[in-house]
Length: 60
Image (cartoon, rainbow, N blue to C red; front, side, top):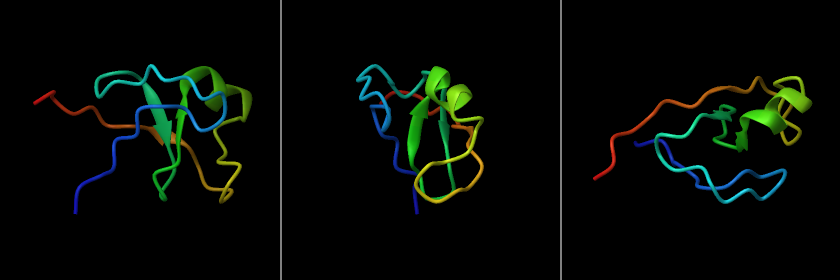
């Protein structure tokens, strides 16, 4: 099962998170840009889980 690579931050709605952009995700794949993740102290506001660096994926 592949990781869903979302293209926007769930907090600020920034639509600039291409596959190779730095982003943070939780275990439920909630996705946040780096500035928002830092502002939330790397804690997902949806589940309370840790936000970790999203792996990169080569573009098709």
